[in-house]
Length: 105
Image (cartoon, rainbow, N blue to C red; front, top):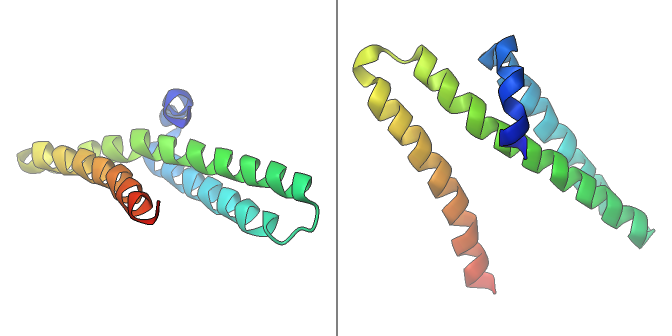
């Protein structure tokens, strides 16, 4: 969902959008960490879901803003390889947690 709704915000500048997305990551992570400290299970679960939603929106937004920023700032000679490495790193970042989870399952 973050990737779907991130596009219109790109008109404010990629660097500003990446910075604001970082704030969203910090906020979502903070909510997830504090949700574990509560005694009420229902409130804790709701806060965990909200925090994970914000963190997921930020991850989707990063997958839109970062490749665009890299493509705009890299020299023409290495524009293709930098875009390729960006996508490879995103896919590897998705694959690695799944593999780690499979080891513990």
